[in-house]
Each structure stands twice: as C-alpha cells, then as structure tokens.
Amino acid sequence: MSETFAGVAVVGSANLDLVVEVSRPPRVGETLLGRAGGRFPGGKGLNQAVAAARTGASTRFCGVVGADEAGAVLEAALTEAGVDAALRRSASAPTGVAHVLAFDDGDNSILVAAGANGELTPEDAVAGIAGAAVVLAQLEVPFAAVAAALVAARGAGARTILNAAPAHEAAVELLPEVDVLVVNETECAELGGVERLLGAGAGAVVLTEGAAGVTLHRPGRPGAHVAAFRIDAVDTTGAGDAFCGALAAGLAQGRDTEHALVRACAAGAIVARHRGATTPALTADALDALVAGR
Image 1 (tube, rainbow, N blue to C red):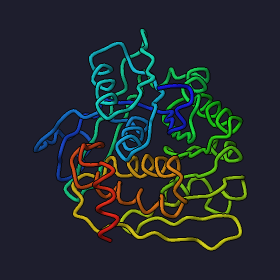
Image 2: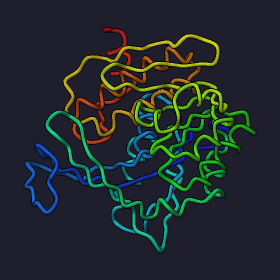
Image 3: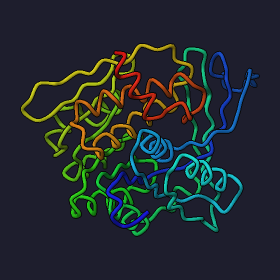
Image 4: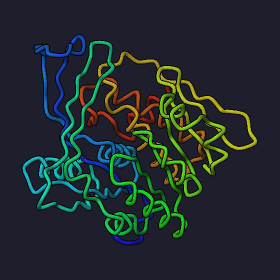
C-alpha cells in the first residue's frame, strides 16, 4: 500500500479473543462450565480495521503483537480481510489476549491482558497513518501513541475519529484534534456528557445507544437520531467496533456523516448476528442490501 493510499488508517489494539459461552457470570470462587468456546481475532483496533476493509475502504492497521503464534494468527486474519498489516513484533511481550464471556442474551463481559499492545509508540503511530484520508483510534493502546496519531493526522489534513473506549479522562485533552468522537452511554457519562465533550473541542459526538440506535450531536444543531436495525443478536462483542470501522470507511469513501452512520449501524447489526468480533458475513454487498431493505 503506497504512501498516497488515502484510505483508513487504524491505530489500536490487536488481541486473541478466547470466547466461552455461558448463561451467567461466575460467582467469586466458582468454577462455571461453559457450553462452547473458540479463539477469534480481536482487539478494538483489529476489529475496526477489518470492518473498514470489509465495507470497502483501503485500510491499514498500525499495532504491536508478540513474536508468537497468536501474533501470527492475528497478522493472517488482517491480511485475509484485505488489511495492510503494519504490525511490529515485540521481542519482549506476548500478543494481547482477551477472555470473553458471551451470555445468552447477546451481551458479554471481557477481561484483557494487553501484552504487546502496551508497546505501541508515538513513532509507530505517526508512521502508520501516513497517507490516510481518515484516521481512527481507540484507547486500548498507550495514550501518547493515540495523541501523536491524531495530531499528525490533523496536520496532514486527514479526518479523525476517536472511539473513547475504554473511557479515560485524559481523552478530553485530545478533543480539539478529533472530528468525530464515538462513545456509548456509559463512556459519555464518565467523560461528563455530550455538552462537555462538544465544548472541549470535539467536532461531533456520536452517542451509541445499543438497540435504540445512535444520535449525532454537533455544536449549535439539534441531535440527529439514526435507528438501529432490528436483529436477533447472537454476540455483540464486535458490534461497536464494526460500527466504528464502517463509519470510518463511509467517511473515507466521501459519504456524508448521516449516511455513513446508517451504514455503520448496519455493519454493527451484521456482526452481532454471528459469533466472534469479526465475521466474513460483513461485506460491502451485505451492507448495501441491509440498508436498501430498511
């Protein structure tokens, strides 16, 4: 992929997800037997990069994995999805791992051991975004790397999206560099609410509201709501990440924000129908069909 690729650059985490299906969380001191399990590529950054590529955008992923079998699995998953995997292999830390409890109602609980994700540097991030039209980041990797990516992206004229997950107060400092901030209701509350986030400099705040859909908030304008697609959810683990990746793809493809949000909601719905944080069922054609059938 050339320096002039003008697509989506994703700066973020890559984990191997270890998923177990259970009816409820275990109690303290309890051993609970699950019904099924599996290993899946994951991490917010990887999931979002895969979604951006599968929904039609030229995509590069910038991250760090270990020099181990899990890192090779993640690199192969990115390549298979059509992502330019700008991965650095750490000689001192293992690939990140996420332990996912997938519940019967489609919700989940996740425990992450960050591993090599914690070694992403500002230099890695700045090199990884070169030539991007849209830069997408989250907060599962070192804050300094995210900040460097957003500042460099703005300086190069790229659009910036920050998915402030997990929520961290320091994220507010970055908002003057952020065109679109994506947060769920819990993250928004932890960061002080929509008005504070807009006042701190975010160009727009996209509030994701689960089954209710999303609302786009912009300074001086009424909120614009986009309803969710009605589905029978199997696993919501990667739905939010698919949303972010498809949103970035839509903006890189020149779509207006409202249209890109509709497609992003559709991407989240497609992923939630399947087990695992990513699925080959998410394609540009599937997205077009779901949106057209609304």
